[in-house]
Structures are given as C-alpha cells and as structure tokens.
Image 1: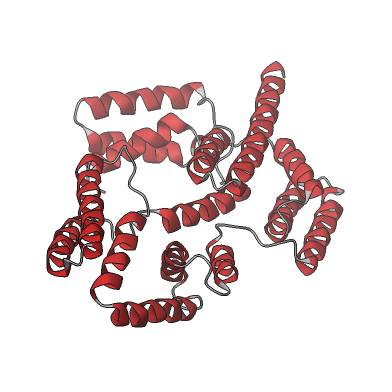
Image 2 (image 1 turned 120 degrees about the horizontal axis):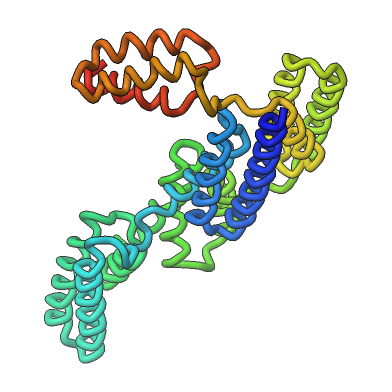
Length: 332
C-alpha cells in the first residue's frame, strides 16, 4: 500500500513537471527560441517516459511544430559551432572586402578592374553557397554583385524571385519562406512583404495564428464531452476522455480547463511502466542476461520472448532493452 502511494506521488510529480516544461517550451517558441523550446520538450518527453509508455500527445504536437520551425531556419546563418565556420567566415570576409574594393574602383571609373574584383567576390561566395545555399550574407552579396554587373538582369531576377515566392506559398512553403526572407533583406519596404512572410510563418508553424472562434468553441465542446465521460470513473471512459482532451488542446492549446483535466486523468490512470519483475520472472531475466553474455543469444531470446508473454513484463525497461540488444546481435 505504501509503495502504491509512493508510486502515485511520483506520477503526480512527473505530470506536473511535464506540464511546466510544455508551458516553458511554448513561451520559448513564441520568442522564436526554437532550440531551447525543443530542449524543454525533449526533457518533457523523457520524463513522461519514466511513468507512461504511450506518448504525451501535447509534447509530440509541439515537438512537431518546433522542429518544423527549426528546419525553416536552418542554413540562413552559420553557427560558430559549425566545423566549417572559420573557413566559411574567411570566404565571406574576403568576398566583402573585395566587394568594397570594387565599389571604390567604380567610383574611380575603373570598371574593368572593379569587375575583376567582383570575379573574386563570386568565387568566394560560391564556396559558401555550395554548402550553405540559404546563407543570408552570401546570398545578399551575390544579389549586389549582379546589380552591378547587369542591372537589367537583376531587375528581372528580382521580379521572378517575388513571383516564385507567391506561387510557392501554396506549393512549397519552405522555399517561399526562404525567398521572402531574401526579398526582405534586399528590399525591406517591398509592398505586402510583411503579410506574405506572416502567412508563410503561419503555414510553417513558426508563428501561431490568432485564436479562431470556431476552433475555440470546438475545443470547449470536446472538453465538455470529456468531462461527462470522467463522471463514470471507468478506466475505458477515462482513456476516451483523454483522447477528447487531446483533440480539445489541438483546437485550442490555451484551453486551461482541458489541460488541468488531462493532467488529473493521467495521474488517476497511474503509470504503466513496470518498475520490477516478479521473483520467478526476475530469475529467468537474470538467466537470459547470463546467456547473452555467454554468446548464447538464441537461448536468451527464447527466455525473453516467454517473459514478454506476461503483459505485466512488457513495460519493464531492462527486459525491453535486453530483448532489443539480443535481437540486434541476431540481426532480427
């Protein structure tokens, strides 16, 4: 009885910590601090797995959104932790230096010498763009070089960039977003640019749309249906209520009543990660471990398979891990 109370207390603590981590991740996400948001969500995922075998749907939902946002940002900057940072930084510095030199030569009416400088700029930029095609600094400098070399082509290509971004908003949002960010760096005052970028960010999940009254009402309805099921107190009804609450929170992640009821039900259902084996099963488990260590993986697998026939053993982490290692050694 005491062990049950201790276990229940541990589950309650984990559920509360997971809720805190979800809320922290959402705050970080709203600040576009996606790496830190992902960190908190992965921490929440790991903590949840200590007491529950099924995933926490809110954690998975926000992880998917945060990862999408991270992917949309990848490659626009080169992290100073990147192994190639120093080499790429050197190429960009040389390119910038030669570009400024070309501008000085143009002011002195030495266009041929300026164009030679621009050749050097393009060579250095090519080294960067070959590995980081979305790098902002290299792309913007490339556009500046084109504007000097061929103003007419620059104008045509810039118009096509905008047209392509508009098309891709419904076909390839990630590409549209990257193109629009380039447009913003080249011409920040371009008409409707902020609205186009905002629509791309909504589609990618980089930003969340304002509350939708229809979805808010649906969320309230799902919560009400879940609350009715909870009245029965039956485990099957509680599981169904959890599914309804997950739907409520997808429609309106800010539905505090749905969050609270979900956490209450999760605690009430208890954990389903086994913390020990029955004494006889533990003896067989240790035998399987020894057989595996003695390179008798086939015999060890027979024992673990038999142990897994007991539903109470299937969530025992050490047994699950042992069976996975055995199967890997047998290439199953």
